[in-house]
Image 1 (cartoon, rainbow, N blue to C red):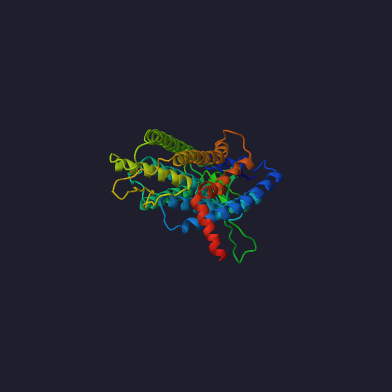
Image 2 (cartoon, rainbow, N blue to C red; image 1 turned 90 degrees about the vertical axis):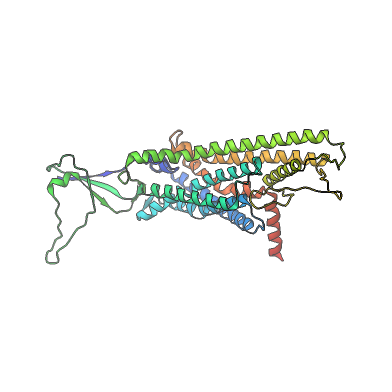
Length: 424
């Protein structure tokens, strides 16, 4: 007598944030946990949609756009789509306990979570690189708006390829293998085929036949309301082992790059401010119109002032297109350059700006690590799975408008202006 067995696979073969969670947590998740997840994700989705929509609206209406504006708009757009599509999709999949009747839904879901989520990570890295070039190397003009758009386009293509590969590894189909006491075919790989019954209108009963020598080795793939899970038979497993490692490394590499770049930026700002404070403290009693003042040094100092103000959202000088580098100088009637930043009030303002810079960079790095690290460790089985904590990585897509927009003075000013215009 023949019997059928269902062949499944462990979800740990994928390196996405969802991989280990899909197979290992779904069997043990309680209804209370599922309810908490649905409520939590619903709140995150609602807040994220509003916040990112405001960020997109405000930064789109800025009259003067720089490279940082392009990256922030891309980040806000990605986070908006994540909150609008990916998170609600996750809520639906969780509510259905990963039981879907359409294979395309399963694949689209895993395409979304392997594109929108990591794309935010790589955009944050691009923003860090942009800030590094603009603050530490302001006169190189390496990052322009055109290059920023090219970088974004390349990143989109790479992420879409990754998402396409990942989604092909998931399916709702179940492998049903027929076993029987029939002749075996030595060293013959299993055969994937769809089982279809046929009926002759002249006969009362349906019938179908198979080659008896293939019975033991036949694997029938049948569509049904199944679990959206990993399909190890789709692509070579050695390839996916490499793919899993590379995908899992995205967060680690992004985290390291961001930490290193922001550390360099912070040290550079500290060193520049200390040097300027020492110079200005010794020159505070000099005449304003000293003929020995170097015009190029003044341009560098004013550029550094401007770049720091851009980090803190306090634009004090008219920027040029790109990184916002300006070569500002103030002249007297006799044509000599006047140092206009030697007052004690200005020195104190620079000190406060330095503190704001340190705080902003600390928040950026802290949120980036805290949001993704627990989920990353759970996906790699380094720590035990907690589905509620796991889904907290979506917080990152929600708070980005806060750390990249609402802490920016220009954003606040522009938002107030828009609100006033709407009221009138």
